Length: 347
Ligand code: ADP
Image 1: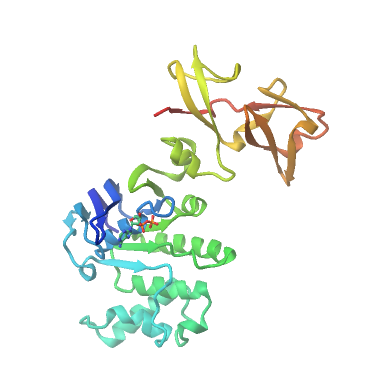
Image 2: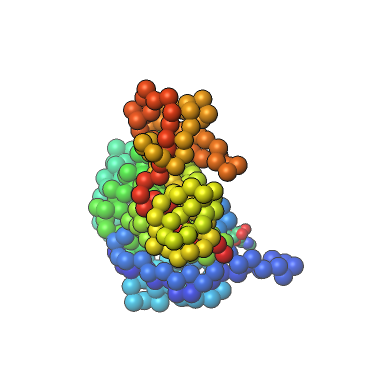
Protein backbone atom coordinates (compact mmCIF):
# COMPACT_ATOMS: atom_id res chain seq x y z
CA UNK A 1 0.00 0.00 0.00
CA UNK A 2 0.85 3.66 -0.33
CA UNK A 3 0.57 6.46 2.19
CA UNK A 4 -2.21 8.97 1.61
CA UNK A 5 -1.78 12.62 2.46
CA UNK A 6 -4.58 15.16 2.50
CA UNK A 7 -3.36 18.72 2.56
CA UNK A 8 -5.84 21.45 3.42
CA UNK A 9 -8.47 19.41 1.57
CA UNK A 10 -11.63 21.49 1.24
CA UNK A 11 -14.96 21.14 -0.54
CA UNK A 12 -17.56 23.86 -0.87
CA UNK A 13 -20.79 23.00 -2.68
CA UNK A 14 -22.62 25.91 -4.25
CA UNK A 15 -26.27 25.51 -5.21
CA UNK A 16 -28.12 27.31 -8.02
CA UNK A 17 -29.03 30.24 -5.78
CA UNK A 18 -25.40 30.67 -4.77
CA UNK A 19 -25.79 29.23 -1.25
CA UNK A 20 -22.60 27.59 -0.09
CA UNK A 21 -22.15 24.45 2.00
CA UNK A 22 -18.74 23.89 3.52
CA UNK A 23 -18.79 20.08 3.33
CA UNK A 24 -15.10 19.43 4.03
CA UNK A 25 -13.15 22.04 5.96
CA UNK A 26 -9.38 22.10 5.45
CA UNK A 27 -8.52 18.50 6.30
CA UNK A 28 -4.88 17.79 7.02
CA UNK A 29 -4.27 14.10 7.42
CA UNK A 30 -1.46 11.62 6.83
CA UNK A 31 -2.48 7.97 6.54
CA UNK A 32 0.46 5.56 6.83
CA UNK A 33 0.81 2.80 4.21
CA UNK A 34 -1.02 -0.47 4.77
CA UNK A 35 -3.38 0.89 7.41
CA UNK A 36 -7.13 0.50 7.64
CA UNK A 37 -8.48 3.93 8.49
CA UNK A 38 -12.09 4.79 9.07
CA UNK A 39 -13.74 8.12 8.45
CA UNK A 40 -16.30 8.35 11.22
CA UNK A 41 -18.92 10.91 12.08
CA UNK A 42 -22.63 11.69 12.00
CA UNK A 43 -24.63 11.89 8.80
CA UNK A 44 -23.70 14.96 6.78
CA UNK A 45 -20.30 15.51 8.41
CA UNK A 46 -18.45 15.17 5.09
CA UNK A 47 -17.30 11.53 5.06
CA UNK A 48 -18.51 10.63 1.57
CA UNK A 49 -17.41 13.95 0.11
CA UNK A 50 -13.91 13.32 1.46
CA UNK A 51 -13.88 9.78 0.07
CA UNK A 52 -15.11 10.91 -3.36
CA UNK A 53 -12.40 13.55 -3.53
CA UNK A 54 -9.79 10.89 -2.71
CA UNK A 55 -11.36 8.70 -5.42
CA UNK A 56 -11.27 11.55 -7.93
CA UNK A 57 -15.04 11.57 -8.38
CA UNK A 58 -15.33 15.06 -6.87
CA UNK A 59 -12.97 17.95 -7.50
CA UNK A 60 -11.68 19.66 -4.33
CA UNK A 61 -12.40 23.37 -3.92
CA UNK A 62 -8.98 23.69 -2.38
CA UNK A 63 -6.09 21.57 -1.15
CA UNK A 64 -4.13 18.58 -2.38
CA UNK A 65 -4.21 14.79 -2.29
CA UNK A 66 -1.04 12.71 -2.42
CA UNK A 67 -0.67 8.95 -2.86
CA UNK A 68 2.87 8.32 -1.70
CA UNK A 69 4.89 11.17 -3.20
CA UNK A 70 2.51 11.62 -6.14
CA UNK A 71 0.18 14.58 -6.23
CA UNK A 72 -2.99 12.95 -7.62
CA UNK A 73 -5.29 15.93 -7.08
CA UNK A 74 -5.83 16.35 -10.83
CA UNK A 75 -5.43 12.72 -11.87
CA UNK A 76 -8.58 11.07 -13.26
CA UNK A 77 -10.19 8.31 -11.13
CA UNK A 78 -9.20 5.46 -13.45
CA UNK A 79 -5.54 6.50 -13.30
CA UNK A 80 -5.33 6.84 -9.52
CA UNK A 81 -4.84 3.16 -8.74
CA UNK A 82 -7.84 2.92 -6.47
CA UNK A 83 -10.50 0.29 -5.87
CA UNK A 84 -13.89 1.60 -4.86
CA UNK A 85 -16.73 -0.24 -3.11
CA UNK A 86 -20.12 1.41 -2.70
CA UNK A 87 -22.82 0.80 -0.16
CA UNK A 88 -25.18 -0.63 -2.81
CA UNK A 89 -22.39 -2.81 -4.35
CA UNK A 90 -23.19 -1.47 -7.87
CA UNK A 91 -22.72 -4.87 -9.51
CA UNK A 92 -23.81 -5.36 -13.12
CA UNK A 93 -27.02 -7.43 -12.81
CA UNK A 94 -26.88 -9.03 -16.27
CA UNK A 95 -23.31 -10.29 -15.78
CA UNK A 96 -22.15 -13.33 -13.88
CA UNK A 97 -19.92 -13.03 -10.85
CA UNK A 98 -16.93 -13.93 -13.05
CA UNK A 99 -17.81 -11.26 -15.60
CA UNK A 100 -18.31 -8.68 -12.87
CA UNK A 101 -14.88 -9.36 -11.41
CA UNK A 102 -13.28 -9.38 -14.88
CA UNK A 103 -14.92 -6.13 -15.93
CA UNK A 104 -12.23 -3.68 -14.72
CA UNK A 105 -9.62 -5.64 -16.71
CA UNK A 106 -11.41 -5.06 -20.03
CA UNK A 107 -9.68 -2.57 -22.30
CA UNK A 108 -6.45 -3.29 -20.50
CA UNK A 109 -3.71 -4.88 -22.45
CA UNK A 110 -4.03 -8.20 -20.69
CA UNK A 111 -4.33 -11.78 -21.97
CA UNK A 112 -7.67 -13.52 -21.42
CA UNK A 113 -5.99 -16.37 -19.59
CA UNK A 114 -4.10 -14.01 -17.32
CA UNK A 115 -7.30 -12.05 -16.63
CA UNK A 116 -9.16 -15.24 -15.68
CA UNK A 117 -6.34 -16.20 -13.37
CA UNK A 118 -6.48 -12.82 -11.65
CA UNK A 119 -10.27 -13.01 -11.32
CA UNK A 120 -10.05 -16.45 -9.75
CA UNK A 121 -7.33 -15.29 -7.38
CA UNK A 122 -9.57 -12.41 -6.24
CA UNK A 123 -12.61 -14.69 -5.95
CA UNK A 124 -10.56 -16.98 -3.71
CA UNK A 125 -9.29 -14.07 -1.64
CA UNK A 126 -12.84 -12.96 -0.86
CA UNK A 127 -14.23 -16.51 -0.56
CA UNK A 128 -16.58 -16.53 -3.54
CA UNK A 129 -14.82 -18.87 -5.97
CA UNK A 130 -17.69 -21.40 -5.91
CA UNK A 131 -20.22 -18.80 -7.12
CA UNK A 132 -18.52 -17.61 -10.31
CA UNK A 133 -21.31 -18.61 -12.71
CA UNK A 134 -24.14 -17.03 -10.73
CA UNK A 135 -25.76 -13.67 -11.36
CA UNK A 136 -25.74 -11.09 -8.54
CA UNK A 137 -29.48 -11.57 -7.88
CA UNK A 138 -28.79 -15.21 -6.97
CA UNK A 139 -26.40 -14.18 -4.18
CA UNK A 140 -26.94 -13.04 -0.60
CA UNK A 141 -26.07 -9.48 0.39
CA UNK A 142 -22.82 -10.60 1.97
CA UNK A 143 -21.83 -12.54 -1.16
CA UNK A 144 -22.64 -9.55 -3.36
CA UNK A 145 -20.44 -7.42 -1.15
CA UNK A 146 -17.61 -9.96 -1.57
CA UNK A 147 -17.97 -9.73 -5.36
CA UNK A 148 -17.83 -5.93 -5.18
CA UNK A 149 -14.61 -6.17 -3.15
CA UNK A 150 -13.08 -8.69 -5.56
CA UNK A 151 -13.92 -6.39 -8.47
CA UNK A 152 -12.39 -3.42 -6.66
CA UNK A 153 -9.17 -5.36 -6.03
CA UNK A 154 -8.68 -7.14 -9.36
CA UNK A 155 -6.47 -4.38 -10.80
CA UNK A 156 -4.28 -4.59 -7.69
CA UNK A 157 -4.86 -0.97 -6.67
CA UNK A 158 -2.68 0.85 -4.14
CA UNK A 159 -5.67 2.20 -2.26
CA UNK A 160 -9.04 0.66 -1.38
CA UNK A 161 -11.95 2.99 -0.66
CA UNK A 162 -15.10 1.66 1.00
CA UNK A 163 -18.22 3.81 1.36
CA UNK A 164 -20.49 2.45 4.14
CA UNK A 165 -19.93 -1.05 2.73
CA UNK A 166 -21.86 -2.89 5.44
CA UNK A 167 -24.93 -0.74 5.92
CA UNK A 168 -27.18 -2.83 3.67
CA UNK A 169 -26.42 -6.08 5.50
CA UNK A 170 -28.34 -7.58 8.41
CA UNK A 171 -26.72 -7.54 11.84
CA UNK A 172 -25.21 -11.02 11.65
CA UNK A 173 -23.73 -10.54 8.18
CA UNK A 174 -22.39 -7.15 9.15
CA UNK A 175 -20.32 -8.70 11.91
CA UNK A 176 -19.09 -11.44 9.59
CA UNK A 177 -18.19 -9.08 6.74
CA UNK A 178 -16.47 -6.73 9.18
CA UNK A 179 -14.04 -9.52 10.03
CA UNK A 180 -13.74 -10.49 6.37
CA UNK A 181 -12.82 -6.95 5.29
CA UNK A 182 -10.23 -6.81 8.05
CA UNK A 183 -8.78 -10.15 6.93
CA UNK A 184 -8.70 -9.18 3.24
CA UNK A 185 -7.08 -5.87 4.12
CA UNK A 186 -4.41 -7.62 6.22
CA UNK A 187 -3.71 -10.24 3.56
CA UNK A 188 -3.30 -7.68 0.80
CA UNK A 189 -1.68 -4.95 2.91
CA UNK A 190 -3.62 -2.39 0.92
CA UNK A 191 -4.08 1.10 2.39
CA UNK A 192 -7.81 1.25 3.05
CA UNK A 193 -10.24 4.02 3.89
CA UNK A 194 -13.54 2.90 5.33
CA UNK A 195 -16.47 5.31 5.67
CA UNK A 196 -18.99 4.61 8.41
CA UNK A 197 -21.32 6.42 10.80
CA UNK A 198 -21.27 3.41 13.15
CA UNK A 199 -18.81 4.02 15.99
CA UNK A 200 -18.73 0.42 17.11
CA UNK A 201 -18.02 -0.80 13.59
CA UNK A 202 -15.24 1.77 13.21
CA UNK A 203 -13.66 0.86 16.54
CA UNK A 204 -13.68 -2.85 15.82
CA UNK A 205 -12.21 -2.68 12.32
CA UNK A 206 -9.77 0.24 12.25
CA UNK A 207 -6.09 0.73 12.86
CA UNK A 208 -6.80 4.45 12.93
CA UNK A 209 -9.97 6.51 13.03
CA UNK A 210 -10.56 10.03 11.80
CA UNK A 211 -13.56 11.57 13.56
CA UNK A 212 -15.27 14.35 11.61
CA UNK A 213 -17.93 16.88 12.57
CA UNK A 214 -19.16 19.62 10.23
CA UNK A 215 -16.41 18.73 7.77
CA UNK A 216 -13.68 19.33 10.34
CA UNK A 217 -11.29 16.79 11.78
CA UNK A 218 -12.02 16.37 15.49
CA UNK A 219 -9.43 13.70 16.24
CA UNK A 220 -7.28 11.16 14.45
CA UNK A 221 -5.81 8.31 16.46
CA UNK A 222 -6.15 4.62 17.30
CA UNK A 223 -9.60 3.45 18.45
CA UNK A 224 -8.27 2.96 21.99
CA UNK A 225 -6.81 6.46 22.22
CA UNK A 226 -9.94 8.04 20.81
CA UNK A 227 -12.16 6.11 23.22
CA UNK A 228 -10.08 6.64 26.36
CA UNK A 229 -8.61 10.05 25.55
CA UNK A 230 -11.18 11.90 23.47
CA UNK A 231 -9.97 15.36 22.54
CA UNK A 232 -13.28 17.11 23.05
CA UNK A 233 -16.84 16.62 24.18
CA UNK A 234 -18.09 15.87 20.67
CA UNK A 235 -15.72 12.91 20.30
CA UNK A 236 -16.43 11.75 23.87
CA UNK A 237 -20.16 11.71 23.18
CA UNK A 238 -19.93 10.19 19.72
CA UNK A 239 -18.13 7.06 20.95
CA UNK A 240 -19.43 4.61 23.50
CA UNK A 241 -22.67 2.79 24.08
CA UNK A 242 -24.46 3.51 26.36
CA UNK A 243 -23.15 7.04 25.92
CA UNK A 244 -20.80 8.84 28.26
CA UNK A 245 -22.37 10.70 31.21
CA UNK A 246 -21.79 14.43 31.04
CA UNK A 247 -22.04 17.34 33.43
CA UNK A 248 -20.10 20.36 34.58
CA UNK A 249 -17.75 20.37 37.54
CA UNK A 250 -15.29 22.58 39.29
CA UNK A 251 -11.63 21.96 39.99
CA UNK A 252 -10.57 23.42 43.32
CA UNK A 253 -7.10 22.67 44.72
CA UNK A 254 -6.59 19.61 42.51
CA UNK A 255 -9.99 18.12 43.38
CA UNK A 256 -12.77 17.63 40.86
CA UNK A 257 -15.95 18.67 42.67
CA UNK A 258 -19.57 18.48 41.74
CA UNK A 259 -22.26 19.76 44.12
CA UNK A 260 -19.71 19.62 46.92
CA UNK A 261 -18.83 15.98 46.25
CA UNK A 262 -15.26 15.08 45.35
CA UNK A 263 -15.16 12.86 42.25
CA UNK A 264 -11.41 12.48 41.84
CA UNK A 265 -8.06 14.22 42.03
CA UNK A 266 -6.50 15.96 39.04
CA UNK A 267 -3.55 18.06 37.97
CA UNK A 268 -5.75 20.42 35.98
CA UNK A 269 -5.80 24.05 37.03
CA UNK A 270 -8.65 25.52 39.05
CA UNK A 271 -11.80 26.43 37.20
CA UNK A 272 -15.03 25.18 35.68
CA UNK A 273 -14.97 22.27 33.23
CA UNK A 274 -17.29 20.08 31.24
CA UNK A 275 -16.82 16.54 32.45
CA UNK A 276 -17.53 13.08 31.09
CA UNK A 277 -17.62 9.74 32.89
CA UNK A 278 -18.11 6.53 30.92
CA UNK A 279 -20.75 4.18 32.36
CA UNK A 280 -18.16 1.44 32.90
CA UNK A 281 -15.96 3.76 34.94
CA UNK A 282 -18.17 3.56 38.02
CA UNK A 283 -17.93 0.80 40.58
CA UNK A 284 -19.45 -0.33 43.84
CA UNK A 285 -17.17 0.61 46.75
CA UNK A 286 -17.21 1.05 50.53
CA UNK A 287 -17.38 4.83 50.77
CA UNK A 288 -18.36 6.04 47.34
CA UNK A 289 -19.47 9.41 46.08
CA UNK A 290 -23.08 8.47 45.35
CA UNK A 291 -25.05 6.60 48.02
CA UNK A 292 -28.46 5.05 47.52
CA UNK A 293 -30.86 2.51 48.89
CA UNK A 294 -31.77 -0.23 46.42
CA UNK A 295 -35.20 1.22 45.71
CA UNK A 296 -33.80 4.68 44.96
CA UNK A 297 -32.16 3.51 41.75
CA UNK A 298 -33.16 1.51 38.72
CA UNK A 299 -31.26 -1.72 38.39
CA UNK A 300 -31.04 -3.77 35.22
CA UNK A 301 -29.03 -6.98 35.37
CA UNK A 302 -27.56 -7.82 31.96
CA UNK A 303 -25.69 -11.03 32.78
CA UNK A 304 -22.20 -10.26 34.00
CA UNK A 305 -22.86 -6.51 33.97
CA UNK A 306 -25.50 -4.53 35.80
CA UNK A 307 -26.71 -1.13 34.71
CA UNK A 308 -27.62 1.21 37.53
CA UNK A 309 -29.52 4.36 36.69
CA UNK A 310 -29.76 7.16 39.19
CA UNK A 311 -30.58 10.84 39.28
CA UNK A 312 -27.90 13.28 40.11
CA UNK A 313 -28.16 17.04 39.94
CA UNK A 314 -31.27 16.78 37.83
CA UNK A 315 -29.87 14.47 35.20
CA UNK A 316 -29.89 10.72 34.81
CA UNK A 317 -26.59 8.89 35.24
CA UNK A 318 -25.90 5.45 33.82
CA UNK A 319 -23.36 3.30 35.65
CA UNK A 320 -22.32 -0.19 34.60
CA UNK A 321 -20.88 -2.34 37.38
CA UNK A 322 -20.07 -6.01 37.92
CA UNK A 323 -23.30 -7.85 38.72
CA UNK A 324 -21.76 -9.73 41.63
CA UNK A 325 -20.71 -6.46 43.25
CA UNK A 326 -24.33 -5.54 44.02
CA UNK A 327 -25.39 -8.95 45.38
CA UNK A 328 -26.76 -8.93 48.95
CA UNK A 329 -26.35 -5.18 49.35
CA UNK A 330 -29.14 -3.06 50.81
CA UNK A 331 -27.24 0.14 50.27
CA UNK A 332 -25.33 0.95 47.15
CA UNK A 333 -22.29 3.14 47.34
CA UNK A 334 -21.05 4.09 43.90
CA UNK A 335 -17.60 5.49 43.26
CA UNK A 336 -15.73 6.60 40.16
CA UNK A 337 -12.59 4.72 39.13
CA UNK A 338 -9.40 6.74 39.62
CA UNK A 339 -8.34 8.89 36.69
CA UNK A 340 -11.57 8.27 34.80
CA UNK A 341 -13.22 11.65 35.02
CA UNK A 342 -12.57 13.28 31.64
CA UNK A 343 -12.20 17.06 31.78
CA UNK A 344 -12.92 19.32 28.83
CA UNK A 345 -12.51 23.06 28.60
CA UNK A 346 -15.75 24.98 28.46
CA UNK A 347 -15.64 26.78 25.10
P1 ADP B 1 -21.67 12.14 5.06
O1 ADP B 1 -21.08 11.22 4.06
O2 ADP B 1 -20.81 12.32 6.28
O3 ADP B 1 -23.08 11.80 5.43
P2 ADP B 1 -21.59 14.08 2.91
O4 ADP B 1 -20.15 14.13 2.54
O5 ADP B 1 -22.49 13.27 2.04
O6 ADP B 1 -21.73 13.63 4.43
O7 ADP B 1 -22.16 15.57 2.96
C1 ADP B 1 -21.50 16.62 3.64
C2 ADP B 1 -22.30 17.91 3.45
O8 ADP B 1 -22.26 18.32 2.09
C3 ADP B 1 -23.77 17.78 3.81
O9 ADP B 1 -24.19 18.99 4.38
C4 ADP B 1 -24.42 17.56 2.47
O10 ADP B 1 -25.75 18.01 2.48
C5 ADP B 1 -23.56 18.38 1.55
N1 ADP B 1 -23.50 17.82 0.18
C6 ADP B 1 -23.05 16.59 -0.18
N2 ADP B 1 -23.10 16.42 -1.51
C7 ADP B 1 -23.61 17.58 -2.02
C8 ADP B 1 -23.90 18.03 -3.34
N3 ADP B 1 -23.67 17.26 -4.41
N4 ADP B 1 -24.40 19.27 -3.48
C9 ADP B 1 -24.63 20.07 -2.40
N5 ADP B 1 -24.37 19.71 -1.14
C10 ADP B 1 -23.86 18.47 -0.93
